[in-house]
Image (tube, rainbow, N blue to C red):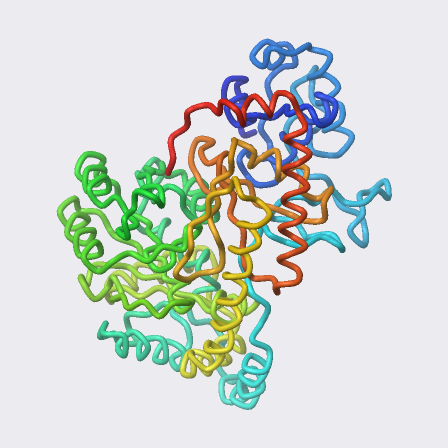
Length: 495
């Protein structure tokens, strides 16, 4: 039993849920379903009673009753005593269908995308095929030498740890293999770090917006995120981060750890200047906060801007890396770089979760790390073309959107003309696309005015996707209520 959701909290999460494009009960059900799918409403919580939610939203109880009935029919609300059903994910039948044979409802991150939809919810690339295939072929020839062993290694195999350490050393951060722990991806690495450094109810400083899966991991660990707003693009002045605000939060809140993405920040694509990196390291040290740095986007430097790894400024920095963005997410290979005593603590915590990663994948990853830059020139050239294409398409088709040109990474962070993000995400599959709503990147329902749009698709598909975005916006703008929002939008904090 995971408790219940009070009507005020659900109303805040719903935001502008009723633009009037469909019957009110269906729009309410659609947004609640999206909130469940993308994790903003947890599983196994009781929704507010029909009477209390109707009173809070200022709508008829009949509308709420019909909405809850639709959610039950779709499998997102259990049959509970009275009206207090609990949130759930529907059981899926074969070949992507619901048990009754209907098409599976899959309009949000976390579920397999149906055929025919362009996926703008994930910012990931297909594999650098030939390079990855060659690495696995080499790994299979090396595997027989390791078969006599047990195959368990909480730290990771030696060749991979040595290759990762050599990369850090070459980048100006002297590192030995004893300072590396291999993980099953960056998310696994963060979970290990949270379990080791931040107990339940511990505070974790985060940028706002931030990477949604990191926010999920922080909340799942029972920690309390401490969000620090990033300045709007027009106010950043090339600085990118409000370091003074971060210093204040570190000094006053004394969080156990801080999670930051300084290299082509997800979702804004910003690169933290070295001067700000030094300031942040000093502030974290002064507050006794462990600084955890996500470097998974570091290799996706589209404009060639120079930067120094944060660990070069302090041996106390904990770094997370991965091959997911540079090579392929399917490799599920990541790592932690830290001081040797801390690595030993991470390894001990890791054994409560698993006993080590797959050996063949690690052997292949060792080859990929040794020749890390091999697939990058072609990939970066393609991404630069995609980025410029997407920015031009948005400017031409969605002139009321404000975009921030990223120096690297995989996506553009867009400010919408009104708080449309969740509503657009709900109706996006009707136009052939899947989106990740802006509030996924924030705490407390923030960023309804924002949408992350990846440029991982080729130009022709990006054109189709942007046209779909325009069509979705046109449908929402046809609502009289939404027209009032566009004319006189509510004041919201921009982060």
